[in-house]
Amino acid sequence: MAKSKIFSNLKRFTFGIMPSKWKSAFLAWVLTARYKPPELVFPWNPHAISRALVILPEDPVEAFHQIVNYMQIAVYFETASFVIFCTGKVSAFFRYIHPEATVIEYDVAQRYLFSHEFDEQAKIFSKEEFDLCLVLEHAPDISLLFLAGKTAAAIRAGYTEAGAFPFFNMHINASPDKRYRSEQNCVLARALGATIEKKVHWSVSKEAQEEIAQMFHEFSIPSAARLVGIDVGLFYPVFGEEWTQALCNELKKNKTFSYYCYIGEELDESVSPFAASLGLPLFSKLSAPRSAALVARSTGIISGKSIFFELANLLKKPVIGIFEEKQSAIYCQQSAVTKAATYSSTPDRGVIEKVVLFVNNFEAPRKA
Image 1 (cartoon, rainbow, N blue to C red):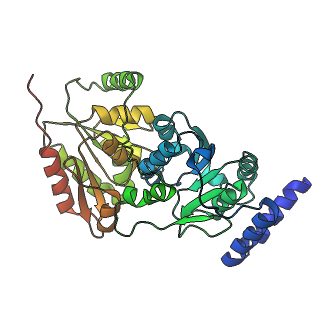
Image 2: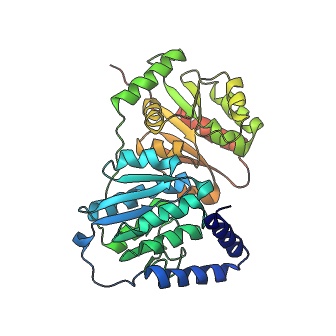
Image 3: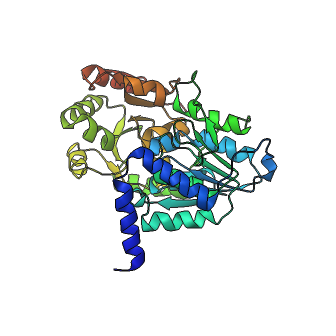
């Protein structure tokens, strides 16, 4: 075994048995001694920021709720080049939203201290002379904190609960008067000086539309069909077969609409066979552009805490989200086209009735 691998394994073992406070203190000492991350100096000139690293949350939904915050920051530091560090689950979406940025993916399974892959990426970042490093995760893994500190960027900002100096030198408190996650997150943009609100618009490419049209043809879906998407990939693992089956059966009683099943990521191998048993077209594991094209083509969406729900919001499509009561205020900003069907412990028949009512009230087709 190579000496470097033995040393790496020894570091992981030693670090693994340390108490949490010791880990943080040890890494803080390493950063201070070797990388010398600076304290924050006021005032700063936003035009002097030439290179910025943004680390997105690992949870895809949390990452989506950082889009407005991120875009406000990107517009404010308009002369800077941005590097986005994120998982593959959201990389394609952020490439589309901000094509000028460099997007670097990482594998969550390799994201731990002293892993070869993550350590190599951290070494690269430490040499890139970032002026700004933002960690947009509210509770980041310590490996991400260490990475932020290793950049030694002049501004290393994160949420107050996320980490201390020298990992960060600027801490932002989540807004106490905001419950909706996107609004909470935007307090970071304001703290940096960004005041211009940036609305995010997603335009679906012609190529993606044509690809979805071809899939419709293969499923024998008529071009005039009023489609309603059901997020079976979310409902089946979380709420179970019986409830998901009951929801679909009730929806299918309304023959005005055509229904399809959507599966974003099949973590449970039994999801696809169950979806197939429903006798509905099944769209699974679509690329980001195709998922957006599918949502754009739909009359409405039934989902919950998922990318599918967030895409419907971005595309201004009628969507009803099935949320636990505490989650609803955080992840579902209700409007004329966005509604929530909430439950306290598990969704019941009443939740199904709310969903069916929402679908039945979709806008009638416009006459030519």
